[in-house]
Length: 189
Image (cartoon, rainbow, N blue to C red; front, side, top):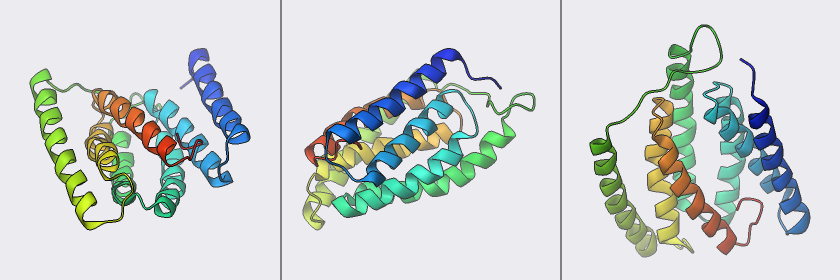
């Protein structure tokens, strides 16, 4: 499978932004590495390329450590979930590969199911935020919950090759940027 010119440009811009942010803002080298691995994983995932999991495993390991440092407990739990589901994802994507390429065939959810899923995710996120605020020292319990709960569903949709995963990932990414900015970790933002 060849990667398009626009994909290479998107990858280059994403990696360049990571390096620029790292050079301008205080962060650990591990934050830079984790961000770069995440960019590579997302670009490959958007292409339906099974190699997304190679970068994904490395990103999960580095990101989990960074979340431990910040005490983002729901994010830590989510990354354990990511690791397990990525193992299953390799299996699922391998079985959906198109014509011996590295690209997977995708499918679609119904609008009704997607709406129901959103309502459930909002309710579970609010409850999770309440639990985190009550029983942990998480500095951003509701933000942590609203980046974690939809990400769990998005990861499952990604593993099962549903296109609608991107709606949830977009929400999670916007909220995660805010969470990491508030934690003053600009590379992760």
